[in-house]
Length: 267
Image 1: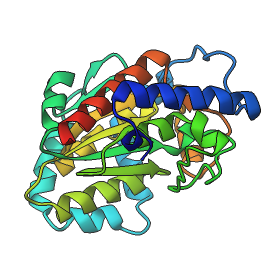
Image 2: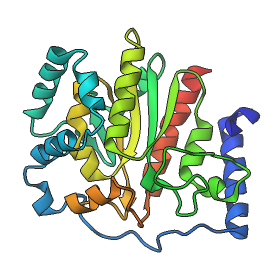
Image 3: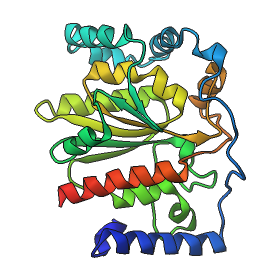
Image 4: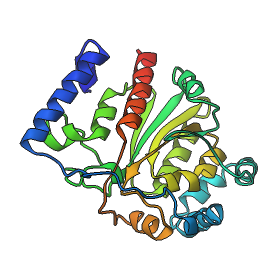
């Protein structure tokens, strides 16, 4: 990893950013000229959103992967799901951070010292020029590749430690749901927490399922050309997502602060 080649966080980040500017000068990736001023969820879509999410999960679990994992502990998972579902919100919010099962960002940071952490990125956050393709869980994250060097996903992934961290690129909600269940069932004696990026609508729709799995963590709200209607979301789940989503500068800094804490906690 890129960070491992440097003596300090500051040195690594400075070197990465310098390389990113050089890559941009040679082969700039497409960027949004300005952030669109649109709601995270349209008013019509917000109506009965939990019910819409439940119907979607059941209707599109074509491989029965989520159901299969659910049936390993059906009573346990059912109680958790119902307890979360009947609440107005499945999360607490701190700016662009959606908190699931934790009271604060500081409480999350304390868990980084001993937990297994899933760090996931929505595929729609990839650059349009991504060498691995956008609608895929692949990511070469090559710091010598001009596109990867400009990608915030690559920067965060290279700043992560290797121990007790599971990095993922997320093409669909069923993909991340299945991966979370697999990780939880494979590590029954270790707490699993997550740091995952997604559009606001996705974070609102599917928090109950993370609560059902018993994992705690932070969903990071993306900005830009987000999905804020069911139609846009369903197209995105099929890989039809021409628009770019991104961190705001402030949110990217908060994410990197967490990965810095994660990295120092694993040294």
